[in-house]
Length: 71
Image (cartoon, rainbow, N blue to C red; front, side, top):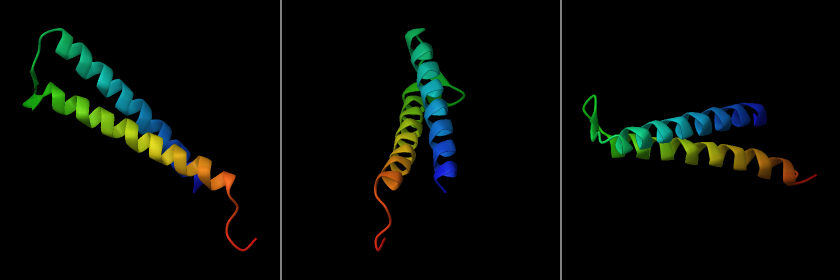
């Protein structure tokens, strides 16, 4: 399970970061819409991906720091 969460967290974080960079570059170039989506919406989706990645990696870190109860 920790390996799955680590992989998911890394992929979600990288995808979110790339989407944020893409949306930021489009917005700086003066575009407001892309394929029917507002650029701010794409930025929010990217932020959500980074937050998901942070939560997954946080679960991996806290799971290793504390042993299961009863041991």
